[in-house]
Length: 370
Image (tube, rainbow, N blue to C red; front, top):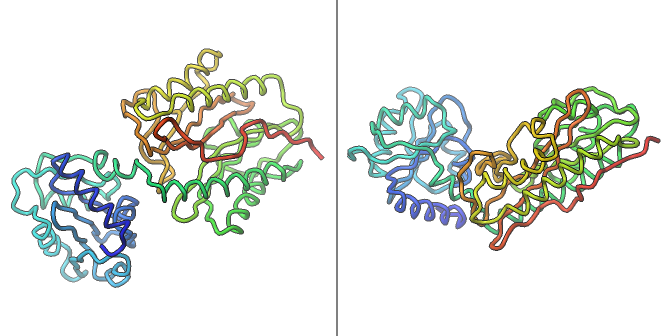
């Protein structure tokens, strides 16, 4: 492969394939494929796959897309046209990667691949030794390198500025959607693409995944902003909360409990810890304060090329966290019909602990009505 980053990733994958006794890794059009090869082909019903064997790797590629995709890689293409279909090209590719004549080979299938693509592959390679990418491509993607860390950091610094601008822009009568537009306009003005933006005014903050709408800001109303942008291929993700006016005693109490939960989870997040230990650190604080039933989701999710990817920080996950893992810590308390408080940081695990990407304080972003 011509680009050294992708060549190094392919070499690392083959080393893991050897360690895990994997004969074939099969990826569909996905972030797995893009991360490993730099190829992001047009996705439709025409089968596209990247097959990686111990010695050879190549693409099953519709002829319609081959010339465009060729600009991204020098791995061989096994092309097919609409008139003849993909069966012969897939057989040729399986022979090329050395899998066709194996009895019960061990194969890894992209968990995000279309089912019809996956069935076509398993029909061509009948074996009981099938699994998903957790210990191959997924494991490699989970350990971010220095360049990935820098890209994620840059996205978060831009996100900090956008959220700071958003709280500075709060005005009585403005809608959630108007505030969303301010944030997204800031992203675009600085060369980033909006990834998502959740604005929850008042009781809407009690919906963890509220759909930003036309609710208007009133005096003495809670504000929740959960937003992220994408720049240089990597996203940001961060939640901050505040109050428009004078915060109620209950809001201040809940806010402090969530802040303490974040601090506890950040302290627990280090190489060698289990994901469930980080979740427990946050959850125990909230439960002991009497709000356990109002913390209704996991503590976090991995972040990389995808905003949500492994490792997932859940109460039941036995995953052992490693240096280079990047994930969110975002406990929340959601009081129905009143408000929600979620405070979110993205951390990267370092040799001795972790670093937080955002530099925007979590302290309440209160704004007086004007």
